[in-house]
Image (cartoon, rainbow, N blue to C red):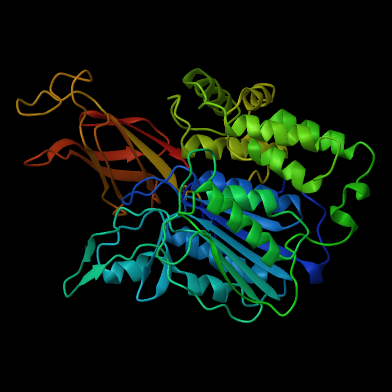
Length: 495
């Protein structure tokens, strides 16, 4: 059994209430879905976690043993892939989906964990995961399928990675790849192209995949539909491309009565639609549609998805209320700050998993009402609220989110002398025992993901000023306890 790790914000199996009964062993379909957005050094992406949550829900809805990993650092991604290789051995289909940053170097494609800094060519190869290794991990399955939405604009493009001996040009987009027998590989954009992150909840590629993924058609036909939809949505700027070597038609949706609307017991469709409506998330409605694509409530579910995709961002008041209820039931340890970030999203996903409701991490009035109606200690009371890569919780949390809130500085030459009405600092966070670091510009609050080695972290906090870094504070903090480091308040919570 792989040792447990909480993938840099959450790693959970989507055993949705909407999921199907397990398939026979010789027809197993397994999936690993990764969404990386909270990069410490390469710029945050808004949609990969949403994309991964929704793809995982859709795959679970049609019978896949799907494990979702979001905001994964290098260690978590490696462990997830090792676990995936074990699950893929002997499966009918092993499917890998990745959303996040990626790049090519010397014609090899690399997927980038959230803790990568890419300072030189050696760190490039050590801090990333090559796509060829991913495909090797699926080689034990009869069919291997990979969808890579990793051509999103990278801050390094157009610059060079510094090295002691050479300078490395960062090439736009991903490199072409040769499919091995019984493999299908789909990229969200052609070689040399970048892919849109999207202005709504999902990227154009993920949105198109979600529309066609659960259809019982050959994967080649499905991908042609996806490609056409993305091309239209991006006015031709982005054209997905695939490489395949399949000796037979392959549908990603399991055949047989277990997936048909008619196979369900009377009232099951109504019951599961009520679950989706109660949760109120796009992921929940899409999982319902994967189970009942032509059902009585299908059009209502589609209307609900469209309404949510076009809805304005949730209000601060709603987010605070939901955070408060999630804290009450033991699923959230962060601040009531009204910001729906990775820690809040993971808390809602943890609650849904603990209650057997499924769904992702979207804030909504419906989600707030469901959490408010729950008894206290939902997450603590659940024997296994999340499916981790292992089954024994470590004494020290595998992953914590450290949030730093700077206070006003009174130094004569500081840019933020007069308090929070003036220009905000550029906060640099250094965690001295693990080497983790992060930087935030023009803000009073900054966060970093840390994988601690003990119950205490050592912080050095700086303001990145024009001429010299000014010390905000330096000292230890005990995990799960609020503390003060110099001119900053520090809080920690499990990822």
